[in-house]
Length: 181
Image (cartoon, rainbow, N blue to C red):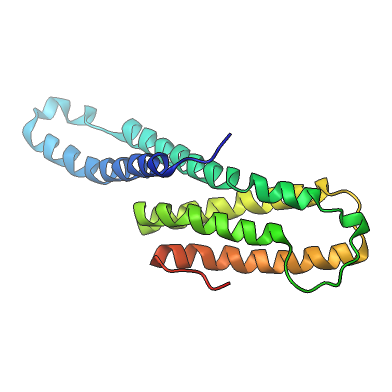
């Protein structure tokens, strides 16, 4: 699967925003409806099922955004797996090329999402993305199989830089700024 393009991200964010609006206005609508209908029908005025469906829709749309952002990292993780960690003998210093790719992709992916979601839904997206990312990152490390001591040191450095990226990208994207490399 491929990541969503800008229009796709915008559409999914619109689904979340519309569902959020409907969920927030439904109790007011129910209250107004109760004022005008016969008291015989008052016990039938409930939108609990609809509100549950809206919650499910918002969660599913958020999963689509998380999956899209995660798919954008496929190439970076391919570079990570292609590195010969077993024979890695360089001096540990600068980050590996895949780390810069992850940072670039996350900045690119998070910006439009931050601009299109409410703060609470953006925070929810970020939390769910980090959960998915950490699981995937660990899985990708396991796929590297044998790792030399210097390779492990490099991966540790890379992990530290990725952690910093995961902490900075959501904030920077939410403020519409550029991340410092």
